[in-house]
Length: 561
Image (cartoon, rainbow, N blue to C red; front, side):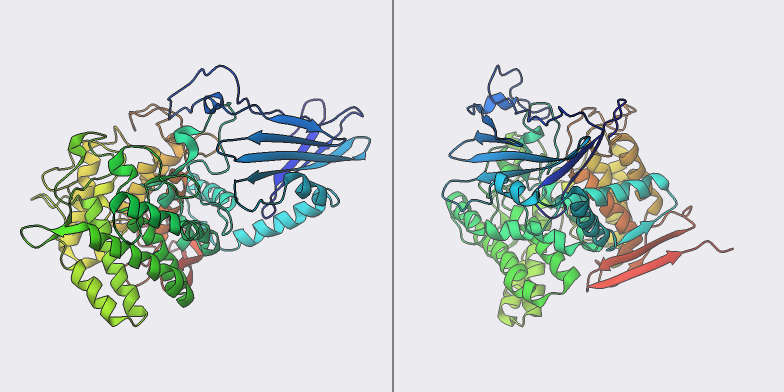
């Protein structure tokens, strides 16, 4: 950053260490940093606004303290239930016109081992230098960028993909909390982040990891898995408490430690959440082929989800297995009509996927009896609900007839791949007609992530032109100038009736996955190179995209000359 008076700020957040660096150049002798504290006290002016965010003062925390000791400032803040956090900034003068410094944040939970205090982190770091640490930081990013690359003639789409890769590299680590709604970013407006910044497992966390697998960033994707593993005991407590059943169920909306939070009950406490999360275990296995991970993580999770579903489902009069009551994210909102007596296509797809995956993984591990058990249960489920025009319904008796941002009825097509284009004319008719109906009903109540998701679906339908068009719409109309997904139509051109600006990340990462899906697919049991490239893309290439089976593929398409 350069000011008109000649002062320069150079700054970065370390790619590995829990600290950030800054360097001010061309400053005066009396220059010194200050720490501006968040305002936890004062009048509550905004309350009950999940989109814009409530005021911080609504939390009711006692205002934190700021202490300065020479060239070090520490801010200490008490939170709820004994939680607290510290921010420390420390600096040193390099010469009469230059100051370098570091900052760090540390937190403390009751009855848990504290991480290293922020002041200790900065004290150890200040002995080195901005330039030395920046060189190591750049080295991490150089390795990250070497993992995969994409080159397409649509400059808007290509640029957005690289921006999404940068975001993913900024927030995904194997030893850090998984990507939440805003991850490490939020508006500096004195408010709680939109939708409280918690974990929403009805779409938001899942979409955020879509690009990790074919993008060849499996190490970063493990942060998601490790988080679920760390909270498994808490999920089992919730499963027993809420459902009275064994196995694994995960709340749809959770705190950092996996504890259930409020919300519309049919979605925030949906019984198929752990099934969708289980797909990420499955993908981590399929893209890595790591037998240790399969045995210790992937199969135990999916088996736990399968046991739970076996315990809570019943058979109807036709002998078909079903949930006693079923739902589909946000369909009919928080109304009694949001509950269905027959399986919704959303729940049905996730249950079928769980038993299918359990059978496959048990077979891979040589557990023949368990594989037979899962196969038997899989075959007890009915077919998906479709119209006489081969269009997927939301549920038996409820067609897709009004615009909705969550394509929950299409889960069997993408991401689960239970209805595949490669399966032939019937499957192709269902996929094609369901997409056509979606476009016909229109995007009135779509968000930006709807366009990103639809691009993935159209890529599975081998519609490169349609997929590219939806990616262009996302990047052009649903992102701010800094590339972050703002949910609503920022052009106000009829692409959605939502025109608001709450920032969430899942649309950004689903976008990256959509482009990767256009260039490489392997979900159908074989590798297909550039399966959904628009005809006008004469030249396109990619390096080191990853496929199921743990292959790395590079390819180049050139126009005949």
